[in-house]
Amino acid sequence: MILEAVRAIQRANYILITAGAGIGVDSGLPDFRGVEGFWRAYPVAKKLGLRFEELANPRWFKENPKLAWAFYGHRLNLYRKTKPHLGFSQLLEIAKSKKDYFVFTSNVDGQFQKANFSPDKIEEVHGSIHYLQCTHPCKEEVWSAKDVEVKVDLEKFEALEPLPRCIFCNSLARPNILMFNDWEFVEKRRVYQEELFNDFLNRASLGKLVIIEIGAGTAVPTVRVTGERIAKLLNAKLIRINPKEAWGADISIPLGAKEAIEKIYRELGF
Ligand SMILES: NC(=O)c1ccc[n+]([C@@H]2O[C@H](COP(=O)([O-])OP(=O)(O)OC[C@H]3O[C@@H](n4cnc5c(N)ncnc54)[C@H](O)[C@@H]3O)[C@@H](O)[C@H]2O)c1
Ligand SMILES: [Zn+2]
Image 1: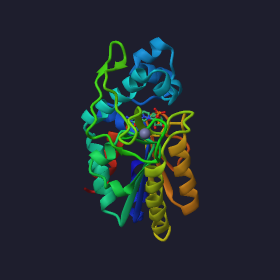
Image 2 (image 1 turned 180 degrees about the vertical axis):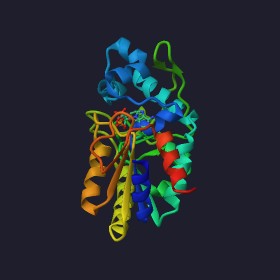
Image 3 (image 1 turned 90 degrees about the horizontal axis):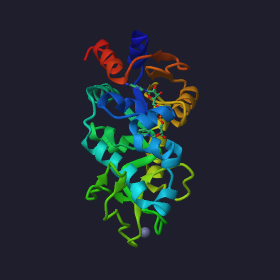
């Protein structure tokens, strides 16, 4: 199956990379596969009896801001200190050897930007933890979190004051991430990225596209469904890299991200 993937990549002149939480597992990041997976990553959530869908919910910013910011502050700090594994740079080299590439991801961790993928070639469909917005929101605006520090008492699972504030109205701020039951998500940045993605797809439709999907789960199937839809629409081959859920693609590679990318990279002759 590696050779089949390599042939599909060789035949293409445009590459679309689609990715879910699984791409980060080899960098040491948790995925949230199933409630057990989530509780392994967040034992406190297990104690509180909260599933991912319940904790990743804007209501906590109103009802319990310190809990809400404990969850997101911990993740912000974790993603900031994580170094993307070697597969990211190999993937970038493969992508750059083509006419053009694009990344579509539901990850909010900013790992593609950290691995030097061009920010103009990424759609973060669920937003990014590295950007903030107002909890109301008072304005349809987002701003960078780069100057924001969030300290978290992990024992109590409480963020410490001062919590991040809106730069316009001084209300509580929150990450610019699409949560569950979220009617306050500011779409501005995502909409801009979507326009870039559509421009890419228009160009790729005139050439030959290959899609490489990595670590996308089935619980929130946005990434899988988007890749499948585009594959059909643009007659592109879909390569699916996933150690546990690789089924359903043109080419299924049941391996971890780092190992699979490394094998493809070598076979391509880099
Ligand atoms: N890093 C992040 O930004 C992050 C992390 C967890 C969840 N989320 C959010 O939660 C939702 C979860 O959906 P999801 O599908 O991304 O995650 P998920 O946790 O539901 O699924 C992860 C997938 O990765 C696969 N996987 C596990 N180890 C892997 C490895 N070493 N290499 C490749 N694949 C591996 C699993 O088999 C699974 O199919 C999304 O909406 C996302 O926004 C984001
Ligand atoms: Zn505000």
